[in-house]
Length: 91
Image (cartoon, rainbow, N blue to C red; front, side):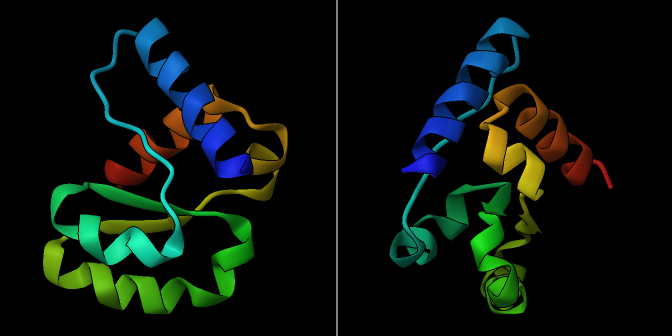
């Protein structure tokens, strides 16, 4: 549920900043279905122990995988999530 609220907050931040982005929250069981159509996969902090698993799934698709910092996740700060995602993609 928190992921959905965070995604909604990030969509609002993107709209406000006039950034064209599709930001969606998906369950871990849906990840494979979307891998070929995303640029970055952001995992909730509670999935940090599974980072390497998701990196292995993402590698053939060239998808960057990152764990959302706990402070961004806990505060549902969509603007900071958007900045984090953009910065991660640019690394």
